[in-house]
Image (cartoon, rainbow, N blue to C red; front, side, top):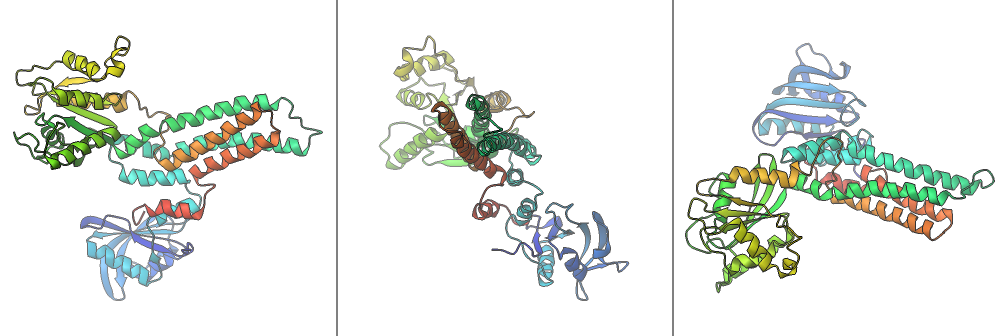
Length: 475
């Protein structure tokens, strides 16, 4: 086990030349180590100064001055880690910050593990595990939705919700256990009916949290987007327009794109992990065939399919196949080349869609065609803004709110919620089967323990270490 009583040090800013670099220390010897390397104009010792103050001076290695610095002092428990903390703000050269870090280590600190400052905040009770994970999410957030959700979690919205559910569970568990220990004074007659209603309400609350996972994952990771279409429909040109640069090769030769091209795009706060695929068609070219199969595979796993149609050419069998691929999936259809004479209309697409999917042909009177169809011209860049607005409506504006809403963003939390839900379901089964009350308390405690894994109250050291190992160094 790593020694968490030691004083740790790490560079907390990016390892690159910059205006400012920060070297951070945390632990019982942080102030003493700072005294060994710091020299102020008035010869003052940092260990004798007040908390939450900043001091101007120099970092010295013996008689050699390394840099002119500002040093921030924070005494525990009123610091991020809950321990005595020193932050040295120096000039941001790579060598400068590295030299200061080496000096601190030579004077008694040890190198921090990835995420160890946040781990210490967790171990010292400053934050719970859901808040710690929010710190990691905040650092890697790539859009405004992910940022706002991470800040909300950092303020404790998941912790407060989970704590409220656990308090109800432990209250009723304690009542049952007390009643079983003292049946002469506390009766559980008819308690099963009361408990069933309470548990049903708790299951609804947990299910609501579970249901937010897909939206939370999209906020955090971005929308897994695949561009489909026939060869020469304008897929690669669309990719380049969205990227704002010529990333994909574009020619008039059908089948130019043979492999998968992946890029991350931020469209006005919307993150798209976008994949440009080979044009779908029947081909004898072995390499192109592999690209087409990969396109089908990516489409099957996508959150969103953007189907690009060359509206200057009639729909053909390849379009029929693509319309079969997108059935039941979140999609947008783009009628490209609107600057030319268009021979394909939205009505043509709708008619072909139902014809290509005979399983829904018989119910098309009651099953409306709901896929957005947008006319665009990639060469003229017409319709691109409408595409962006449509994406917002499909994934965010219509579905996500940031008032009191909570979004689960990682599979660990979702799994714990599902385990709690399943345990509460067993409580309902026991009540309906007329089982003794002690069966209720066993499953209630299982649910209580599962929810505790979200906040970190009931989990092993190995899992905690694994979570924090994914953090960047110095945080």
